[in-house]
Image (cartoon, rainbow, N blue to C red):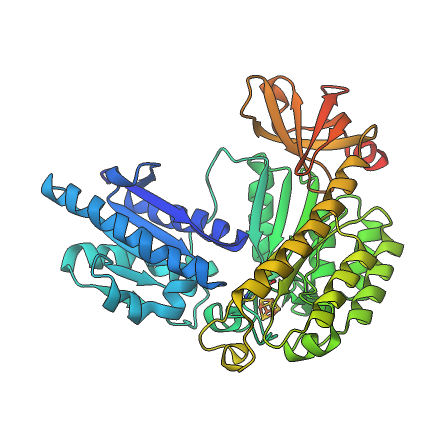
Amino acid sequence: MTVSSKKLFIKTYGCQMNVYDTERMAEAMAPAGYVLTGDAGAADLIILNTCHIREKASEKIYSELGRLRRIKDLRRSEGGKTIICVAGCVAQAEGREIIARAPVVDLVVGPQSYHRLPDLVLRAGRDGRRLIDTDFPEDSKFAGLPERTVPRRAPSAFLTVQEGCDKFCTFCVVPYTRGVEYSRPVAEIVAEASRLADAGVREITLLGQNVNAYHGEGPDAESWSLAQLLTRLCAIDTLERLRYTTSHPRDMSDDLIAVHASEPKLMPYLHLPFQAGSDRILAAMNRKHSADDYLRLVERIREARPDIALSTDIIVGFPGETDDEFEATLELVREVTFAQAYSFKYSARPGTPAASLDSQLPAAVMTERLARLQELLNAQQMSFNKACTGTRLAVLFEKHGRRDGQLVGRSPYLQAVHASGPGTLIGNIIEVEIVAGGPNSLEADIISDTHLPLEAAAAL
Ligand code: 5AD
Ligand code: SF4
């Protein structure tokens, strides 16, 4: 049976897990004849894969829905039909509100229900009824999704191994939108990673909201840690680089730190959010670690892998944060020194414990603190990048750059690297010399145009 081709447009907001989910939704819709388009106006199905982490991220969705209403009306006037679906974390958190507030929406699907998407789209199209599926079903969406079989892949891919979070930081919606922690079984992950590697993927980033709390079922029916999973994945010959994100300091176990010392395929980069530098604020955030715990942890990680590049997430202006407490955040940043960081103004999220505290801070205070913090973080990032000048690095080239003949890749430390070279180098790990370090990227000269074997890359 041949299925007629239909067009699918997906817009992705938020974190890397949404990027991964977007790919999986596209794959789930492919057997029903849907092919991806970059043109929303030509699409039969439009999916907004949304983010609920901060207020700004959620509000964007409603303005985008206004734009989609015009697209849908135009298409209808031409005799066409567009199904509009809101997926992701806003769908999970505000499903009923979306249906009530935005009549343009036909379908609301939470992140745990993507395996049901083809059936839901079919029903929404056929019955003209508006549907909502934001359950946390018993059956895992991963088991219900088709295999990742797209033949030609980018050299670097995401792979979600864990979802949800049991930590309940008091500012965060994730435990409510993504639910409790779930870890995929090792065999399922190894099969997916092997398929990706067979399709030419050289680097995989394992994803999870709390990835280092991973505890999936191993082939021996025991619970495996992230360290065990990484070691197993390193044994896939054609896979050359592994990364994982996002980690919680509390789950940074000794065996995981040891893998950073022993596995050359595990890249020397770690995203380890600390959120705030004051112990009082950390306790109010329910982070379950102190500033000193974090410092000592960083020390142990650097002992295992001295050149590791550290990245973090920081929130300024948590309710009740005093000037001195904010200074403690700056102090922790100065003590650790980050290669990169993400920093945010606190955003009160409905339903989270911190949102009902009386001591919410004025926006102007948060703006001023964020500017000071970002000045410090930018300076640290700049000096990390500048210090690379003159060194040789192994770069995985991923795509063409904006300039003619320019290639863009990633260093082991996750810096974007630009170099001039032939497109044939895309998908290869190449030795380069860094000639300049800028605020957000490195400029490099290519030293050799042959793919670096693992030992040679690790020795650079
Ligand atoms: N306000 C501001 N930032 C937040 N984050 C999570 N929730 C909030 C919030 N309510 C940040 C944290 C987290 C990152 C993904 O987003 O720093 O690590
Ligand atoms: Fe949110 Fe991360 Fe805290 Fe979990 S550990 S509640 S995802 S900030």
